[in-house]
Image (cartoon, rainbow, N blue to C red):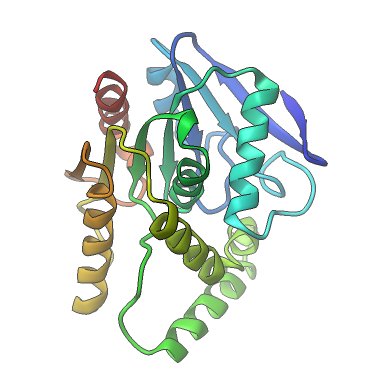
Length: 244
């Protein structure tokens, strides 16, 4: 279905019945056309109302992409109101989508019953040269946009550095609600310098500690594509935060 949200037409899918689970996909934000893999939504929909959507400017959703994470989070809130989804709900954010769900939870804590962050984009102060970091954040989206297969992801990530800084500041200032929270981290990681690997691990553990009901979970045998490779781990995390 398509929904008019603040001047943009967003594509969304609602399936199942029961307490609501809201899925926010990764960098490209295209969750409706298989962004979460073939099994995850079906498993969740056996006992829950499952909402997936494409952020503005991605997938089947129209308009230009929102530049700030706060705008993305506010789009999501308005979408849920238009769909008449009952809150509080559980929110699941994968990769970049975890930035959106963190900012959503910080801005609208009354809507949130539980949080699951699936191999989330790390936040906080990164190690290494600031010049090299800026160069990397600039070059990566440009390289992705050179291929038709990754062009949409490249467009979505062109403000990644600013988006990470915004999400970091928002959560530091407002905090996250004291709800059940799970942070799932992939055990299969790309080879990184030691300082970078330690930063990523520390960032995810600190995210789990932002709620007194938070837990860090290492997902064995899975890469960043946890929803495709180990969907049951996400389902278990959702069940855990919704029963906690």
